[in-house]
Image (cartoon, rainbow, N blue to C red):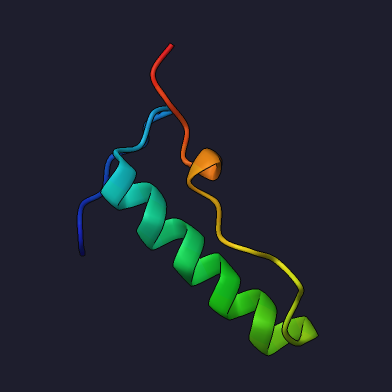
Length: 46
C-alpha cells in the first residue's frame, strides 16, 4: 500500500498536483468552469 503524509502546508508542487486533480474531477463531474488560474491560489508560509 502506498504511504502518504498529511500536512497543513503542502509544497507548491504538491498543491499544484492537488489543484489539477480537483479541477479535472470537477470538470468531469459538473462540466468546465470559468475559473482562471491564479498564482495567488498557492498558499504561502505564514
